[in-house]
Length: 191
Image (cartoon, helix red, strand yellow):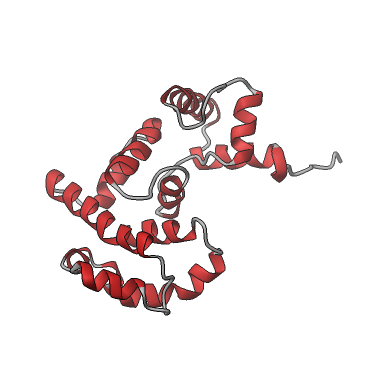
């Protein structure tokens, strides 16, 4: 899980191919994302690793590895269950609640970074891409800021309704909306 969070954090703002090419060195440098080992790393060690040319040298993002390991560790300790189970058990009808948890308790997991990481982990979630946002605005589901509580609540309710009516997953619905509108519009020729 920590690996997925970290990968998405580094993909945000960097060429994804660069992240993918350097990923084996990230895994090696950070003990295959073993949480206990990462939590024992002193600050000086994080600084040294952030200066290593084998990985992407961005100290602010490297610091998130330990911070997000701490979030995972604390959640596991408090609930006496794995973080994977915590994510699995979170109801998809309140996926925005899980996003809020990650944003509040983790580092750099707000915006679409958390949702993309969740999707990478196999959690059913929609993504608020520019195409999905444009569709939601055109349908008058939202009219304010995309990340406002009012908008997120309306978006969740809309996706819950679509899911109930169609039987499709949140991921499928999100992709259908993105492909049906905006830059990703996929034209279907009539037979």
